[in-house]
Amino acid sequence: MNIDNRGSRRGGRHGVEEDASAIPSAAYNTIERVPTGIPGVDDLIEGGLPRGRIVLLSGPAGAGKTTFGFQFLHHGITTAEENGVFVSLEEEIADLYQEMRRYGWNLMEFVGEKKLSLIKSPIPVVVNTPLTIDSLMDRIHTAVVQVNAKRLVFDSLAALGLCYSDPVNLRRDVLRLCDLLRELGCTTLLTTEVPENDLHGAGFGIEQLVTQGMILLHVSQTYRAIEVRKMRGTRHDTNVHRLRMSDRGLLVSPGEHPF
Ligand SMILES: Nc1ncnc2c1ncn2[C@@H]1O[C@H](COP(=O)(O)OP(=O)(O)OP(=O)(O)O)[C@@H](O)[C@H]1O
Ligand SMILES: [Mg+2]
Image (cartoon, rainbow, N blue to C red; front, side, top):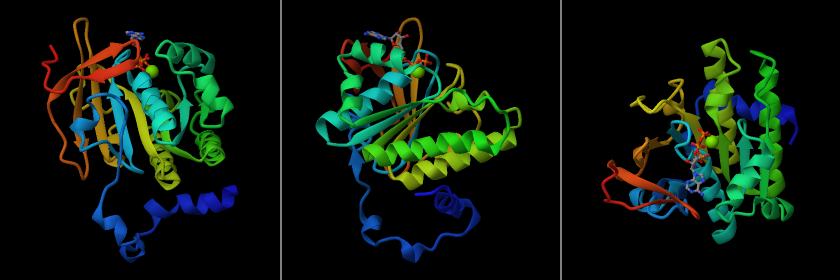
């Protein structure tokens, strides 16, 4: 698909009203679930993330956001025949390979089998030009098509925000990015870093509006925890649960007191 084509698609959601009659009637009936593969998490959200939607995964530094993202992708590839794309604005791919290998996840093998595509984007250096986000969006689009991805992780919005001095431009580009992610149809985790004392768990303010779900991770000297702040169309648990980091990744014991 060329850029002109995609450019016109991107303009649709925020520029033109949508025609409800264009939505297939089957889509009204169910919200399909995509299991995260993280033990205990799916029980909190009726079996998994809503298929094709964008969920914000926020938390402070070291809370487990990147691990959560790869565990979700690993589960898709190994148990659901769902390929994945990981977009890293923070860490180098070589570092990610090493870190995820510690959990027993061989990302290099998945990349070789064309089941996973990793995009490492430098934090765009040219500030406030539309081209910066456009080139990243092009790479995401290409990667999703190449591996026929059904799951996507964007890590992180906080890193993207670093290169904007104008909040209006940042919000505009976050909206455009989310439009693209929605149109690509992948079930998407969008990570963002927030301070532990940010009770709202959203950095720029716009993320809460454009994402359909929000999972918060917590970490302190003495505990790790997880809570589902919102999940549209889902009767979700609202408690804070203990989160553990094991040699096989993250796991949650629903009902266990987090502190
Ligand atoms: N094998 C392991 N066993 C237990 N804990 C681990 C293991 N590997 C990493 N950790 C913990 O996980 C943390 C990093 O997790 P992760 O990179 O997923 O967090 P993050 O939220 O993405 O962090 P950042 O904000 O730096 O991007 C480390 O700081 C460490 O505390
Ligand atoms: Mg991280």
